[in-house]
Amino acid sequence: MKIICIGRNYAAHIEELNNEKTQDPVVFIKPDSAVLPKEQDFYIPEFSQEIHYELEVIIKIKKVGKHIQQKFASEYYDEVGLGIDFTARDLQSFLKSKGLPWEKAKGFDGSAVLGKWIKKESLEDIQNLDFKLLKNGVPVQEGNTQLMLWKIDEIIAYVSKFFMLKKGDIIFTGTPEGVGKVEPNDYLTGILEGRELLNVKIK
Ligand code: ZN
Image 1 (cartoon, rainbow, N blue to C red):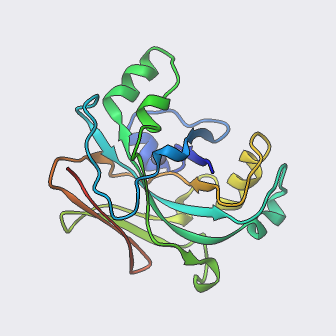
Image 2 (image 1 turned 135 degrees about the horizontal axis):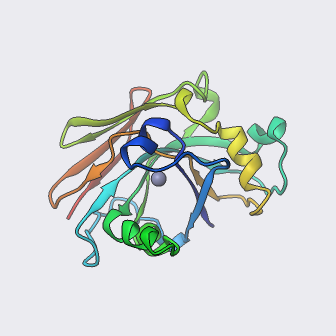
């Protein structure tokens, strides 16, 4: 199982990090070891002083596909959820400044938090989903999938040109603005269309 992540998919988040819009989606991968085991707390790793949360809508691939056409993309997933793409922002900034790959800042153990899955059919419009992240009960990120620069079907078509998608693969579709640092004892809650799907404690 692999986790494919899309970066810079919401204009306001691109601005808050002073990044440039790109012609094509920014794509990176987290290894399966990045998945935080269920019900486990997230421990801030010793190599970073600045771990950021990024709440993202995620989808789970249900069958093998390669070079998937956009018009068929919706047949390749039927579960949707919320995930947190924990990012060692200090390390990522350093690696970016050197023109080096980000893997250490993005793919470390526990950096992918997966919430509960819900059936796509139970949602009216996949490209009009409200989602938000609460930190210690206070909203810090709010987004709607309408604001994605690349829609979910476009993402599936694009990434499947490079990476064969397999059953169980997960796609993180990018984070809206409001990313920020976590501290020990914080707790994060992810809500999609009023449903609480994700909870994680920071240690
Ligand atoms: Zn992200």
